[in-house]
Image (cartoon, rainbow, N blue to C red; front, side):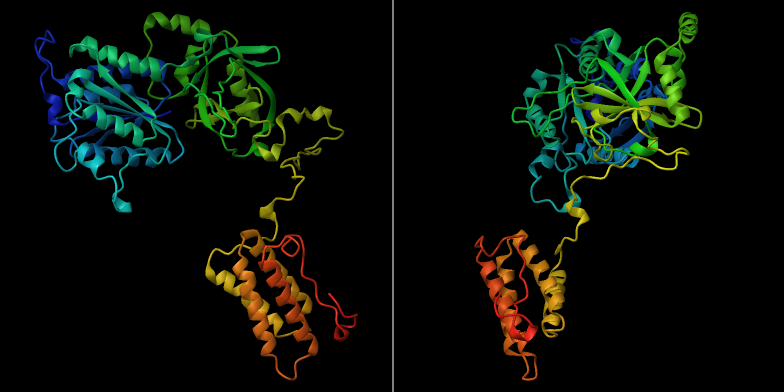
Length: 524
């Protein structure tokens, strides 16, 4: 997932570190740069395909480097960072929100790394003032947290815990994490402020956040398809999943053996809803990693021959990627018990593409139009080719056995005008009885069902009173059957308005009253 580095460039970051704590004259800004340099080097070596952005802030914020994979550009901008004025964290968080939404939209999970010395600012614009004025703000001045996209916030304090606890800084930073849904962590320096301490702090961040899900190193995990297999790396590390419908939810992790269960055309799977997207890279073929994305650094000469040898070794992951790209298909992969995902080729540019893995929601039927994944099978098992001899048709989407509610003629009143129109339609037909008897009862039953579904008893009683009024206003020349039908309909609506199950059954309709004038016997 992309990372935004939010660097504090206020004057407080220029405070010198005590010579008692450090052997050379350094500012807190120098320590922050050293820590970020360590992070950038780690990502350049292990996360070459991840996008990172650099934003600096004081009273205003500035996008120094937009999302890029070129860590040399990020390092250069970091080294040339200037000093500005006071700290205003709220405006900086607004800036991060704008930068991410413009590039990735609202759905992409993002990691925000805030690097600061713990000075929260003074007066209006400070974090203390922002947290004290959270309530009662107008909509256009809302606090930027929680972010409008999935995000984890990691605060890197160029200060030790004792220094932060002397003020309310730690409490305010904890409030900041809570506003973001609790996703994230606060890191502080241990012991004296020096290069060793800051490197240790950023090392903890790397261990907890930027450790790759590496199938070969951490536990035996391979991508399998029949007799073919390949060790892979998955970036970023898949997060455990909790199912809301479970009474006592337990975290579900993807298996270390990723088994391909079949292949399907891209057109049949379309653009399915997914929980997350990940890069899948072969471990042995380092050359492929370098060729996939821009902004990668050149490898040392001593590694070149090893990579050339690795590039000559057959690798199933490379074969799979090329096949999916050429054939225009995706591979369905089993992640765990009744949990599936898909592997596909995604173009990064005109010449470069990546093998991607998207994770579906856990369950036997993650994509309703495909049916249960366990019931899918090869074309050869079918009595006839479901795609036709010339691939002119498709067996998908499957038609649901039960007709969905959104496919039926359902009455919905969003505005008062819609309800008024339905009531007026009933009254217009009532004035044309008995010629419009069938239409009158059809519209009446439609309104009755909607009112019962919504528990809108007052509507039934109100329409009944309107029908009684129409009955008293009938002219002397009106057909006798009209009065009988209106009285009958009004009576049935009043009975239904009581909520009595005998008269308020949803599936029950009000039928026209049979009279001597309508050609039948008297009665209901």
